[in-house]
Image (cartoon, rainbow, N blue to C red; front, side, top):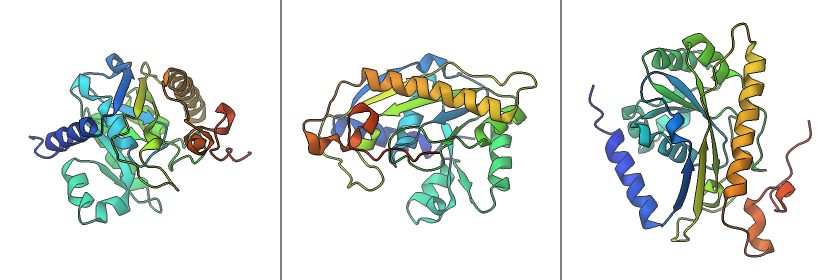
Length: 236
């Protein structure tokens, strides 16, 4: 079936990226499979992360079907677009339907995008991962594709005003090699291995990021362990 909505939305997003002069540094896109199913797994620091995680799949000419909270699909503007782009609504009170939908999509050769932290991390550090991504990959017999984003929080994140000015913000994206669940490996073990790989990619993205806070007031987007003023992650 022809994709009538997703390509124009991508073109609009790319035009917007150019208009606000985002500076992209993307590595690892060769790891995105050119065919077949995969679970794309990313950290979550911005309301716009689905756009940027999806951007990582464009060189492979792949479209990512993201799992997103069901309320987004009820919005009068975003709802029709989300459905037309074949994203997957998630009702957190009853997630089995979304899970089955995602597994069907994976088996049919789609890339399904998941944010296993479930919500934005206010500390900009990795939270614990939910196990759904690993369970889907195991059931559909597809690889997990780890992705790390950095800099996206400067555009729009929880508790901060949007900043869509022409600020030349750098956006760093790192894509890792596909991770395959091992025979007999538990879901918990796969999830921990996946989180460790995303952590490695996140640290690489942070090291490569060319910008530093201009002053103390501008250090909100850096986590505390890197000298910023973002809230410290909660202690276990």
